[in-house]
Image 1 (tube, rainbow, N blue to C red):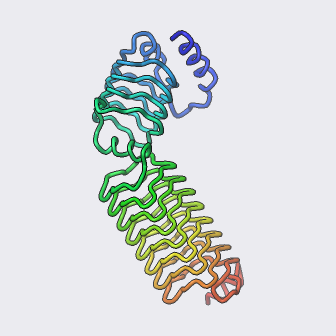
Image 2: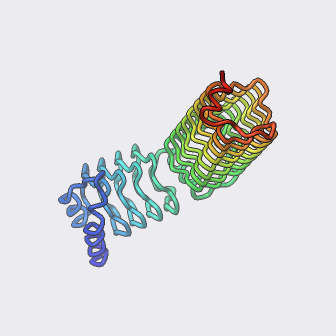
Image 3: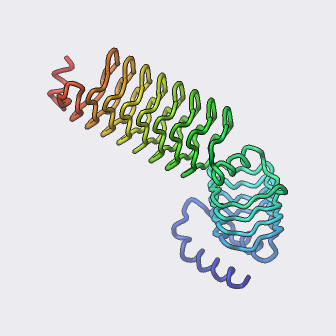
Length: 310
């Protein structure tokens, strides 16, 4: 126990200049360390990693952004606690009460739960996804705001699932069914959705840099204002997709089907459009500077582009 205290104080001293966004109450932290009883405490951004906090009373406490990696919180009272964006990696929560806790953005890798852990059903489901993955049926599930980074969801059934604002960066969703799902504002950087069916889904405003959508079915999918820079959309079916204002710089759209798609104001600079079907597509105001066009020409830039648009 003494070693953990020493480690904690060294960590706080070393890292405090880096925490402008979190100003935890030092007296509250001391209280937690002394008797593990601190309901309603302000512990935003506190470093509590690997500490023994079994049976602690942290009901209603503010632990937003706290580092609880590897902490022992068995049988702890975390009812109504704010744990948004907290790092719970490898944390032991067996027998703990987390009912009504705020857990958006929380990291779940390696967290230990058991049947005695009291936690809202949607968060137990998210824990299961992160730690067990597999071919899951998640149709119409509410996963909004969840941290699912690097999850394995290949072939998962996510029809009409709510994933708005979730973190799916680096996740494997190849072959998944995401038809009519809500992914607005989600983080999809480096995610793999190759061969997935995302038809009719809402991906407006997503961060999809280097996203892999090769061979995906994206009929009528909404990508308005999405960041798809360097995304792989090769041979994807984007018929009637909505890409207004989308960032597609350096994206690979070779052999894609964009018939009837709306790309008004889209940034397609340096994009690969070789053999792309653009029949009836709306490219009004789109920036095609340096893009490889279907006819193997290169998109005009600057004054030349302006002249061609007249």
